[in-house]
Amino acid sequence: MIDEEEGMTGAEMLRRKAEEKLNTRQDKSPDLHIEADVKKLLHELQVHQIELEMQNEELRLANETAETALKKYTMLYDLAPIGYFILDQDGSIADLNFTGADMLREKRYQLLGSNFKLYISEESRQIFNEFFISLYSGYSKESCNVMLGYDNKSLCFVYMEGIVTDDDRKCLLSLVDTTEFRNAVTH
View 1 (cartoon, helix red, strand yellow):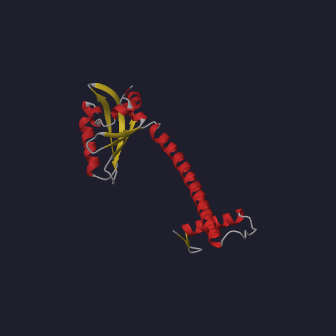
View 2 (view 1 turned 60 degrees about the horizontal axis):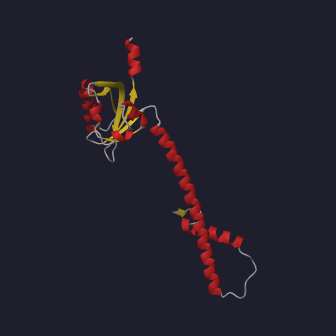
């Protein structure tokens, strides 16, 4: 990476800054007993040490930034009031958040690898299958309303939106529980 103003690479700029720092640290009185090549070697080692210290500080700051971002996005994903699922092309659950696991009334770790289609109620299965086929045949966001359930046990009504990623062809689903809204409208 070349600094356009000074025409120096990042490594050259780092070296120059390290040498400046070393010059401020060194005692200005010359030591007449040290040979010139030993002095030069010592200088090189000290400059290199300062370069490493500066790189270490940059890495530490970058790590702190990454940790902060990870915490933020973990909270946004895991603790969102919407169920999030990542499905493979066959419908198996690759990942999900805590709200998604709550909607399916299972533990999160127990759902990983299981097929999401098993949690679609019998009366909604056709709607979901058409939705899922449509997701993988196009490149746009799709949506549908289905009933979640299994073993003739209804769980909840959900509004579902999904999209398929370009790179690894995973299906990203978001589910909103609409049971209370549906019940309020029908009463």
